[in-house]
Image (cartoon, rainbow, N blue to C red):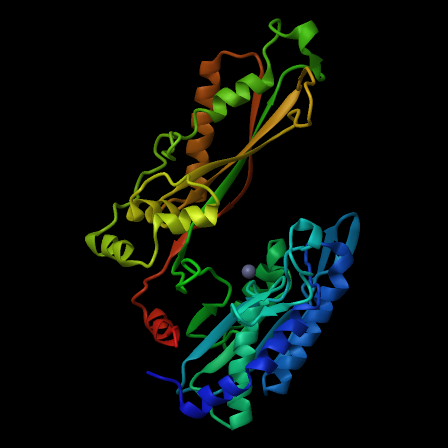
Length: 409
Ligand SMILES: [Zn+2]
């Protein structure tokens, strides 16, 4: 199925305008995690709402309450919701995107000003914070809407929009809004929605776009190990006391093997092996171990087998150690024995793993392993946060439609 020619012609002849519009969006530094940029996030919300109105979308800016950040109380940026098309005979698709961005500064290693988009015509690459995540994808929808609007062509579906300005900061405020809207049923902004399209995702590599039909969940822990009443000097106390850091390192060493096998009993319970059909998908994907290593910036893949690496990345649980809080981490040779250290690690979850169940298994295992160390230090296992994994059926009509729509011209 190919889009109608007048539509494609309109898109082709308006490319410079579309690129300028993206540059305009990139120029607003809508950094949600920086309190001093909050007005820019709000400005970005207004800008987006005006763009949607221009192409016939009915909108509202939804206040999402207050936020405590950097010692201040600020308004959360509004969510921008919208609707166009009310035909009960058509499917109704809800589009999600976010108009906030991560911080960016030239001193972070950018070759160009991050909020001044540069277009390398020869390579066909645009450089600027938010060009892909996630202003570009939102602009894609604006471009489609504009083409239909200008040509007087009816949209083939009813569209609903939910754009937020806090995605890079934990989507604060959005959950409550969505839950309260869902309760309104047909009367709410999301009433009658048949499926959702999240325009905020990865490509498989730099060549091939991808449809995401699952996402791993997360449980995140901090292992707080303490002993002495204050930091000690190794010249005075080394060898005479049990040391928190020694216990923490031993405990962290019991979590996972070098090639990623999680050592916590019961963690893999209930996870099915991949079916032949699923294995076939991995085999045929346009992906290589080289792609992974290029993206990682090192020859460090756990296997030379493409399917093994893909499954490690997409369908198996994994455990990563992230950091040690309270440890001496400066330059030089300070001879401190830290009084209290925290080891941070997380586990990526896959269905049917559940955060609450995994949490119980992790805590039990850590307590047992800690007891085996026979240290007099004390362990507190802190559960920081969790998220549920999900996987959808990639044969659902929603994905079939998306496959047809994602054709490379
Ligand atoms: Zn994003």
